[in-house]
Each structure stands twice: as C-alpha cells, then as structure tokens.
Length: 300
Image (spheres, rainbow, N blue to C red):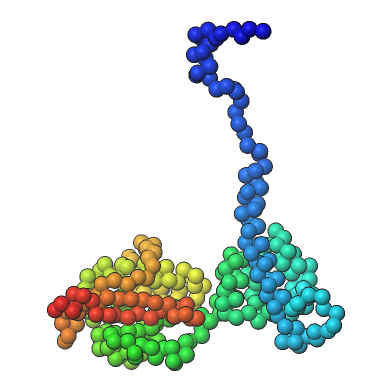
C-alpha cells in the first residue's frame, strides 16, 4: 500500500509537538524507597559493627564457659543482651538492622557491656548518629608524659582543656602571657582575654582577635552545652564583659585555626609568631597551641 507524503502543515505539527503526547511519570514509590534506603543505612552499619564486635569477643573474658556446643565464634546474642542489660529481642533487632530507634542510653549500655575501647565506643556512637552522653575520656587528664611535650617545643606552647583552662605550658609561654600564665590561680584563656587589661595591651588588633576567639570557643563547645562549668563560664563572662556579651550574641562559629599572631610585649617589644593548634590524640578535648617563629620575625 503506497504511503501518502505529509503535507507541509503536518510536517510543522510534527516538528513542534512531541512524538508521544504522554508525560513521563516515574514510579510513585521510588522516592519513598530511596528515602527508606538512606534511612536504614546507619542501622546496617551499626548492625555490621555490633555483629563483628560480638563475634570477636572471647567468652572466657566475660566469665562465660566456651563449651563444646558453640556453633559461632565469640558471644551469643543472648549473652550480649544479658551483659548489656537489654532484651534479647531488642538486641537481635538492632543487630539485624531492623528499622528501630536506638537511644544513646542503649548504646552506652552496649559499650559498657561489651567493654569497648575508647575508639570503639566513639565509632559506635558515630555510626548510630548519636551523641555519647558520657563522652568517655573527656574528663580524663592526659598523662604527665603527654602534657610535658610543651617543654620540648622551641617557642611558647600551652595545652587547653575543653573549657579553655591552661593545663600545661612552658617557660616561654609564661614569659609571653603576663597576667595569665605567670600568676597563681585559675588560668582560663577567655577570662584573661576579656577581663585582664594586660591582654588588651599584649594582643595586637585585640578587637578582631577577641571576636574570632569567641566564635572559635562557641564552635569548640557545641557538643558540651550541658556542661555546668562551661555554662557558668559563659554566664560569668556575659555579665563581666560587655565586649564578650556582644561577641557571643553575634552567634559566630569558626574553627580554631592557626595563622599569624602579633604581640606587643611590655619588655620584649613587638613579636610575631605562626600559631599552630592541634588536638591531642586520645584526648580530643585537649588542644596543644604552639607559637612558632614567623617569617616576619626572622627577618627582623
């Protein structure tokens, strides 16, 4: 059968209209399915981690008889549940990756019951997407051997805890920070900056540095809003220093970073340093700050 050629008006319609006048609509449940997969991903990671922990534990270490009838390595689920103070069904659901809500308190019981190391406990809360209410190690002071590292640094150096109290410093830092590290009593960096007149003279461009320090402190203590010492410190400074109160109300948040630092010391004159700040491995609430010779200082 011969094919009739298209008229010119039909050609124009064909060029301007889609060949199939149907709107493509994806499967309605695909978005829900994708969201569900994203939601259960943390549960699956937690499931795999808990199972690996259970299987590599030695029953003897928990006072349990190994017995000849064990078909799987490590502890049984029933034993883990008993050690951690949770129901067998609940623990089984968690390890199976069921879509159940696991509280921070439950995770803490699992960490204690399985005798997790500091790193394992931190990872447990990380994969579960929860904040550790006990924050293991946050109240533990680093050993003296770690704190003494400041004495080996060829420049002013000090270590701050999470409330920014100086816990150890070397002689050069004591000479530099007059009114802070060279006096008796508490040695909080924020109190020094905002409540001591010596700081306003020592720190060049004090106003900009003060704004940044407050923003860095806010970022550093975000996870410790329930700490009474930190709340007390902030309340005290907001009352005692209008400058701190203004800086705090700006809601600024900045990472604590290094960079050029300049000081106008009353006896040593103008000093330039390169600041480097590091967290102590194993004690994340403690930070080592070093003031190293800056290029500008070497040229003088």
